[in-house]
Image (cartoon, rainbow, N blue to C red; front, top):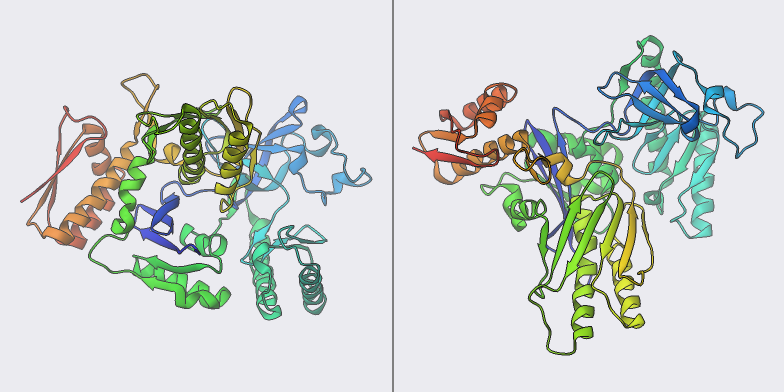
Length: 492
């Protein structure tokens, strides 16, 4: 049975949240907060502040709290310093850059934890069907396009448009370009050229350590990067964001216009499919399996570990069969949790030890099959004699826990609690939901002093906007007995 997929986009002044739902089950969650938008794709004029020959890398000041990290392998091959170098040989970093040198760089990975942003000088401008490389010279094609005839057709189209419009630079043809018309590809290429002319014009006058170009907001990136043919609809609960998405679709993705839907429903958008409850569960260590077994998920900066337990499940047959069925169910749920929580880096899975080699093969096959829809690059090792499987999943953005939580101050960092900002945004959403349902005369927020302080300081304008929108007074009361995650909303 074909899966039914839709995307729900919840927009507030504080944040945008995108939920990818398959057959009524939340599979992915993307969050972009207004005060801390992701940086991937942003272009900066940077200044090299330190060169590390031993690491073949340099630190670059791009105006952020932490310096960015530029590896020698991420310096564009078109750079004049590569002149005369063998095609596959990367020169020593000290021959490529020096302290004080100004470089134009693009963010490959957001800053995560104590690490600064990963940078490259190979600038690129992505669109729906293509990636434009202003400093490149070749045409590349996604390996996922298998048909030789289609690869030749797409290559000829791009080559023809380059010659017809006298375009410079290189192009990578994305998987989504398969079967796309020449007109749509030409429109993409011309759009990318216009965008690059705008960006390159800003480069001329930019001061060091400044932002030159930021990628489009999450709601637009969702359409560019997450949409595919089997998607049924995209629902957006903000009229302004819906209209911007519709305009973008008309210009670049006309086939998507009819799938866009403005959602003004009285029930909050994320109330559909119990998404808020699923988000809450995704912040817990323990994940219950339908059989009665469970997973224990522990994240550290170095790696993530996932332990599989039988729990109360003892089965009706022999013990080996019980362990096999628990591991089989766990394999599917592990892939789901990794995608939902956006777990990246090294993940060690400790399956319950099985004796049967056939059972081990089936569990591994189930794990690989469960990752089929994951857009992020995955590598899976065989099950070791101890029942361990190592998974590496490319880390491109912060995990859900890193976005929504912080180290617990009570247990000296051994656990996590929701951040003050996360709790504030929950409160604002809850008041909006309560007002739709009950229409009270006024609201009183009772919460920890740290939460009330943020509502009176950085989020004061958000609180004022909400108060004006619902046309009801909202008062605040700090309660020292509340922990950081506790709050109450009193209706009058």
